[in-house]
Amino acid sequence: MKSCLTLILFLLAASTATGEAGQSQPEVLVLTTGGTIASRTDAPLIPGPALVQAVPELLDHASIQVEEFSKIGSSKMTPGHWLALSKRINERFAADSELAGIVITHGTDTLEETAYFLNLTVAWDRPVVMVGSMRSSNEVSPDGPANLINAVRVAVSAEAVGQGVLVVLNEDISAARDVWKTDNRRVHTFESLDGGPVGVVDPDGVRFYRRSLQPHTTASEFDVAGIDELPEVLILTDFTGIDRELVARFASQSMDGLVVRTFAGGRMSAGMSAGLREIADQGVPIVVTSRIPKGRIVSAPDYEFPAVVSSGQHDNKARILLMLALTGTSELSEIQRVFDTY
Ligand code: ASP
Image (tube, rainbow, N blue to C red; front, side, top):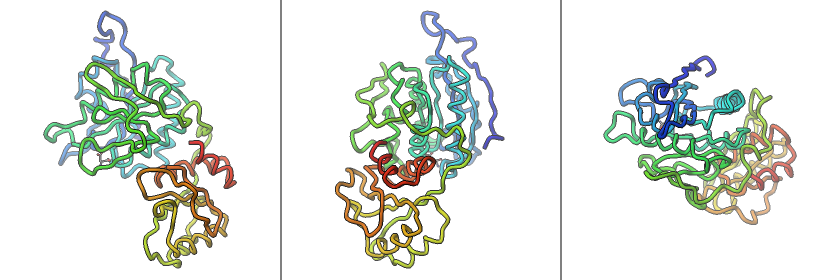
């Protein structure tokens, strides 16, 4: 991870550092991580600088620095990558007060998770914009270049300051907390189910219509500067007729916390409930989430064991929130406060 960092200051715009009317172009750092946006069918992933150089229109909006953070499909992302990426973003903002914003190119498969982690751990209100694509760069009408240009346009927009980490694909601007990948193929795959995108990127400008109200970035209580490894949190999915034995066997796993994906309203099978009681008896904090895309779990059933109920966060984001909560506490009441807050 750290070793593949190649910093190539690409003052690509040196010659064009001045925009229209001669005023200097805002500075944007593009941190590249891999994913379809950097892929070509039947060829290795495109290196970071080449990915940016392939879209000269970026220079109409900003002067660009490029840093290659990793070159992987996002299914290979790990909590270790999240931590290092968050620290790198905080370092770059601290080192360069002129930096208007940071754009992160990333695979779409786990983009929503990296976005949510950064939303809770980046300690600056300058724009951090995540972008990807659904078509490879050498497919017919690739969506990558337009998405990247739009991401840079959002990163230099004054309205994006203080909005938390944003995700830009297919001309939609989505908040990291709400967005998720909903389609295996279509370019409009990212949706925010409870409330829709926070804005759009149109040819004539960037427009925001709303903002995420839950705390993020500078208002978040989570500081990862001193953390080298995140707590181990696992996810267990309930299914009809699951055997208590299977769940109880999970108790032998070393884990700092467990997220359970249950049926609607937090209701779970008898086997899951009985098995979780054994895991809870070992003092492992358990967070209950629903497999239903929309709406919160309201008045969850009485469980036979102490548990935290996730307020609308689905399993993969609840895992991130529990990881961060466990960096500060293992008190269930405190963890519930975190889930009711973020
Ligand atoms: N496999 C890709 C990834 O890295 C999918 C994508 O980027 O769309 O996530």
